[in-house]
Length: 89
Image 1 (cartoon, rainbow, N blue to C red):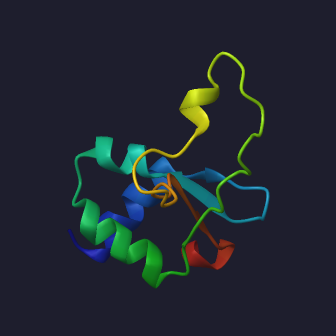
Image 2: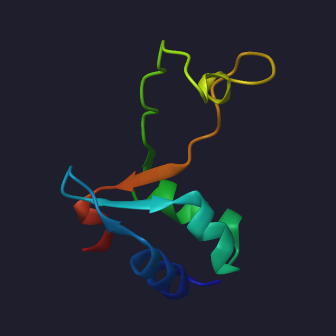
C-alpha cells in the first residue's frame, strides 16, 4: 500500500476524538483487509499514540472476572490509537 491508499483507509475508518484529533480502532483496521503493519507504521509516523486504557474496576459483579488481565499480568494490547488533528493536514 502506498501513502495515499493508507491515508484514505485511515480517514475512512477514523472518527472524531475529544482531543480534537481522530481515533481509530485496531479491530476496524484488521477488518479492512489492508496491510495492517503498513497502516500501523503510518499511524505512528504521523503522531498516532495508543489511547490510555481506562482504569480497572475494583468491583466484582457478574462480569468481574472478565475485567482482570489474563496471563502474566501485562497490560493488554491497545485497542485504539489517537491521531492528532495535524495528521490529516
